[in-house]
Every structure is written in C-alpha cells, then in structure tokens.
Image (cartoon, rainbow, N blue to C red; front, side, top):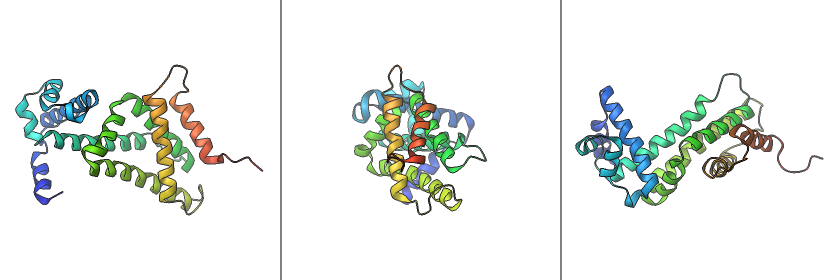
Length: 207
C-alpha cells in the first residue's frame, strides 16, 4: 500500500461516536451485501441501502467498493482474533487455550456465516487481504504453540508447519459444523473437545 493510500485511510477514519457508528453500519451492511450477491454483483448503493445511510456517507469513509471490501476482510479477521482472545482466561494450560479458541471460533462462524464466503472470495478480489488473513491467524497460533513449548505444556520445537496444520483443521471444522451445520450435530464445545483430544493423543494406536 502506498503512503498516499495510507494517508487517505487515516484521513477518512471517523473522529466522532456518530461517525464510528456509521462506519460500523456500513461494514455490517457490506458483509450482508457481499454474502448475498458476491463481490462483482454487489453494489455501493446496495450497501448504503442496507445500512440506512446516504450514498454520500459512503464516500466519507471509502473511495470504492474495493476499498470497503478490503476493510471488511480486515474487520472480520480482527473479529475472529478477538473472539478467540475473549474466550481465554488466566490459568488455562496450552491445550485448554486451543480448545477454548476453537470453540469460540466455531460459535463466531455460526453467528457470522458470511465469513467464509467473503474470505474465500478475497482470494480472487484482493489476494493480499486473503493472504494477510491467514498469515495473521497462523502467526497467532504459532505464538501460542511456541509459548506452550517453552512452558513445558507442549512439545518443544513446534512452529509454522504445526500452526498451519492446526489452523487448517480449525477452518474445516468451522466449515462443517458452523456453515454446513446439520440437525443432530455435536455442539461447538463437543467439536472443540474432540479436536483437542486429537491434539493431545494423536490418531496412532497407543502402544
């Protein structure tokens, strides 16, 4: 991103509570618009109509449909991270942290079903945002794994491959049990506990 672009974004940041509420309305409306129609069929007028704000208000904060899409991907990525952080409490061991973080993610995805469609579409609309989303999550998990290793709660030497393997498991569990949920499925806590047992014991038979 150029310095000019960064300055433009900073200039458009809301400075009042009313402005922050309008921005939130636009992002929430954009999530619904992009989820319902996809990026190419979605429109700025559709976003403002859903948000209940004037078209001019959109351009107070965003220059284009591309700009709000990028902002939405970043906003969703940050919300995923916040959901995981908010589920953690002091005193949890490393495995319990992973269980709680996954459960929180499953609940978040179930309540925000637009997440998967928008993140997946970002691969083609804005590849940089798509990559940043997963690299950020992967780094968070890697940091937790390394901390667990240093604390003696996990095997030492865990790093990027293990973090991305864990992230991949979590992403597909979210797809199956949050987005494609079926009647009779185990709830988020049960799914997270099953995944945690896999982390703890693996799948090889115990000698």
